[in-house]
Every structure is written in C-alpha cells, then in structure tokens.
Image (cartoon, rainbow, N blue to C red; front, top):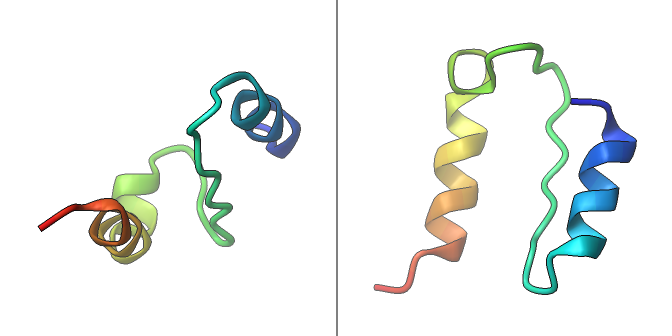
Length: 46
C-alpha cells in the first residue's frame, strides 16, 4: 500500500494507529513478522 493511503486511512478512522514499516513489500507478515508482533503487543490489553 502506498504510504499516502495509510496516512489517509489513519485520518478516516478516529482510533487508528499507523505504523510504517521499512523494508517490507507485498506480504508484510512474511517480510517483517517481528514488527507486526511488536505492534500487536503494544496494542494488546492484558
């Protein structure tokens, strides 16, 4: 997704949090799973 689309979505959804991931391409879960896990852990309420 182009970075501008992510920024736009963040504005559209009031509680959205944008995390930009460098060195990620089409399949972010395969390209940078470490970043996804860290972002989810930050948001998780335990």
